[in-house]
Length: 138
Image (cartoon, rainbow, N blue to C red; front, side, top):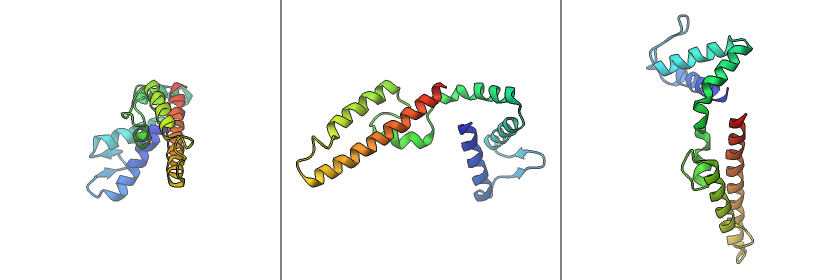
């Protein structure tokens, strides 16, 4: 459901910002095919029964291998390409944690502060990607 809501959110925002888009809500007509597809997909989802919801989940599973855009920064923090395999992410995370661990960088208070922040950032990024990977499996 998350990718659908993100698409609908972008659709709604663009309706108020982009004046070039011609939208006729009475006839569900959009000049832009992406908006049209998002609108119809949302209508199908909201008007569907439980079986329709299951059909929606099956349709989005093919796209669920692509991480959401909000995780791009986390992949960058872990120094791996966007969409990398979780084993590669885990390996990079472990190497970076060892490299930036506060115990290894406690020779000055400034270095300790920087390494503590870096470690905190790495942990948060790894946990976000890990949560997405676990959610993707269910």
